[in-house]
Length: 248
Image 1: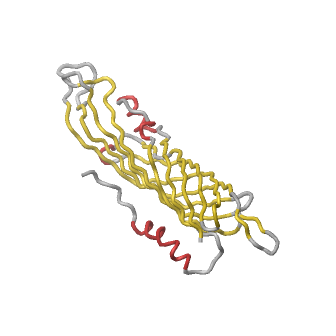
Image 2: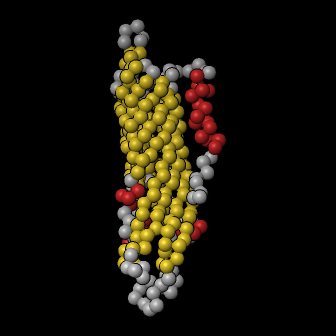
Image 3: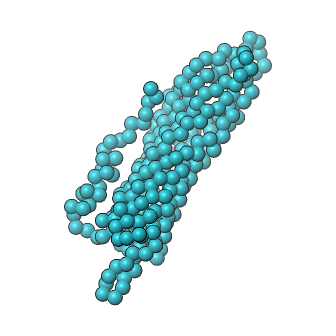
C-alpha cells in the first residue's frame, strides 16, 4: 500500500474546532466556515519536472486535477478578514520512456504521483467592504470582492512506481541493452509556501454565501530520499475554487 502523507493532526483539529470555539465567545459578526472544491494546475518548472519531460512522455499538465479545502475566516472590520486554510490534492499520471522500449518494442511505463496538503494563514482585503450600513445602523450584506495574501507550509509526497531502465552503465546506444526492472521510488518533505488570491462572495442569505476564488501559490523544495541529487521540485501553481461559506 502506498504511504500517505502524515498531516499534522493538531493543526487540522484546530481548524475544525475553530467555528465551535467562536460560537461560544462574543465577538464581531461575520465569522464563517468555508468549504471549497475546484482544480489545481501545477506550475511545473524546476529540475525534477524539467528532467521528467525530457526523459519521459510526461507533461506537467498531466497533473491538473481535483482539489478541495476548508477555511475558518474571522473578520477584523468591514474591510479586513483573516483565514486559516487547509487544502488537499492528489494526482497520478502514467508515462513512458521517450526513446526506449522493451524487448518486444512495447513502451516502458510507470506511474507518477504527487500528493500535497498546504496549510496556510491569509489576510483578505475587501476594497468596498463586505456590508453597507443603512439608516439606523443596520448592516446589509452585499456581493463582496476581496484580494488576499498568505503564507504557510506544504506537506508533500512524490512517488514513481512501475518499470525503469538501469542506466548505471549508460542509456545510449550500447550492447547489451540496459536491463529493465520494477521499482518504487519515493520522497516527501515540508516546504514553505506564499500565495495570492482574489475572490467574490455572493450572499444568498445572512448565514450562507457562495464563494468563487482564484489563487496562485509559490513553493519549492529540494529532493532527497530516493531522489537525492535530482535538484528542486516545484510544488506551486494556480487553483480555481467554487464553494460555500456558512456564516455565524
